[in-house]
Structures are given as C-alpha cells and as structure tokens.
Amino acid sequence: MIRRGLAVILSSPSGAGKSTMARRLMAWDQTLRFSISATTRPPRPGEVEGRHYYFRTREQFGKMVLDGEMLEHAEVFGNHYGSPFAPVAEALDAGRDVIFDIDWQGGQQIRNSRLGGDVVSIFILPPSIAELERRLRARGQDADDVIAGRMAKSEAEISHWAEYDYVLVNDDADACEARLQTILTAERLRRDRQPWLTDHVRSLNVEFRERMP
Ligand code: ADP
Ligand code: 5GP
Image 1 (cartoon, rainbow, N blue to C red):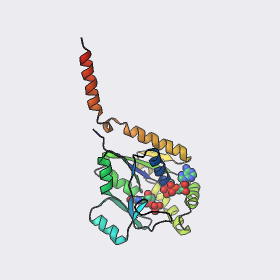
Image 2 (cartoon, helix red, strand yellow):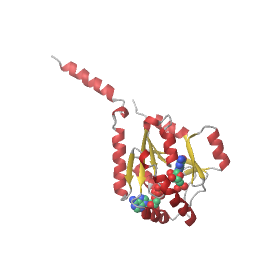
Image 3 (cartoon, rainbow, N blue to C red):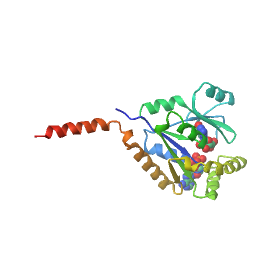
Image 4 (cartoon, rainbow, N blue to C red):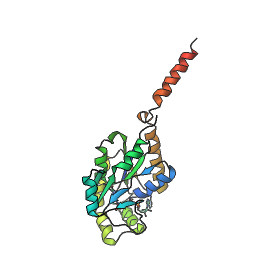
C-alpha cells in the first residue's frame, strides 16, 4: 500500500533562496518531483523551456486557466504564474512528493484546494533585508528596475509568513538545507502518512496470539 505524495510548498520573498533550496532537496532525494510552473515572464538567460518553466504568452496562459488546467495561479510582479495540475496529480497518486516554488497566493490556493491534507508549507525568511538585496543582485539575472520592484514587494510577501506550517531563516545554506531535510523526514513519518502500519500492527498481533500457550 503506498501513501499519497506530499505537496511541499516553498515560499519566500524573491531572492531569499527557495529555488536554491528546492534544487538542493532534489539532489538529496531524487524521488522528489518539482512542479514546473507556467509563466508569462520571459526566460532569464540559461532558463530552459519545460525544465525551469513553461514559458507561455498571455493568451496561452489565459486558455490554460479557462480550461481548468491550473491547480492555482496568480499574478506576481506583473506576470502570470500557475501550477499545471495534471503532472502534480500524477506524481502524488504515485506516492511521490512534489515541491512547489510559488508565492503566498499560490500557497493559500493549494492549502484550500482538495490537496489540503497532503500539503506541507514552508516559508523561507532572509537573515536581513540588506542580505536579501545582496542575493538578488548576486544572482545577476535581473535588471536594476526588476530588482527594485522585487525588493518593493518583499515586505508584502513576508507579511504572510505566519500562514505557513514551518518557517526557516536561510542564513547558512547548508544549515537551511538540513532543516528542510528534517521537516520532510518527519512529515513522511506521520502516522497517517504510513498507511501500511495498520497491516504491520495486525501482523504483530497475530504473532502475539501465536506465542500464547
Ligand atoms: P529565490 O528562488 O527565493 O528567488 P534563489 O534561490 O534564486 O532565490 O537565491 C538568490 C541568490 O542567493 C542566488 O544567487 C543563490 O545562490 C543565493 N543564496 C541562496 N541561499 C543562500 C545562502 N544561504 N547564503 C548565501 N547566498 C544564498
Ligand atoms: P521568478 O520570476 O523569480 O521565477 O518568480 C517570481 C515569483 O513567482 C516567486 O515568488 C515564485 O515563487 C513565484 N512563482 C513561480 N511559479 C509560480 C506559480 O506557479 N504560482 C504562483 N502562485 N507563484 C509562482
């Protein structure tokens, strides 16, 4: 009997490190799947269609929403982003855990969706706002005005921190990754996520009875 997969939501202000942490988690456990979002944002240098995002026009994105293909969708920094449902459903049904790198609006929608009981949500805070800005600049992939726009929205994103099951400060990357591994390991051990335990305890009881004189 397999358990259903977990929907692991990572949110943070842009630049706090959630993509880095998602990448590290997937290198740690290769059974993890990443929910590849669709977006109307243009690709950054090095971003690959179908690996980082599905890059879509506004018209194509709008049709996906109308056709009911999205588990959640939201406008972030003036572009549309959304999580296509079909690949997520397939992975969860097969017992695979799925990581979502999405904003607070998407987090709320998934928590309120039919996936509710399978959701583990984690908010990542930066150690300071100065360090957040440093990381956005160090990533070196966004123009100054884009960085300024993201910094301006970071306070609003951070205001949703208390809606999440877990909150981590991403100071040291190795330490943050270790905390994420601990969360996933513990969440997988919850009683209701080990459906085979009922059979196991039944077999222990049979063994007890067999030992009776
Ligand atoms: P997000 O996905 O939240 O926008 P990224 O994962 O792209 O953020 O991280 C932004 C930048 O900060 C990247 O250049 C990344 O390498 C760097 N970074 C991530 N975590 C840390 C950390 N703990 N310490 C220093 N730099 C970090
Ligand atoms: P970026 O443009 O830096 O890749 O992402 C910008 C923001 O959009 C990040 O906060 C990211 O988590 C969020 N985002 C990415 N994909 C999705 C999605 O499918 N849904 C929602 N709601 N937010 C997303």
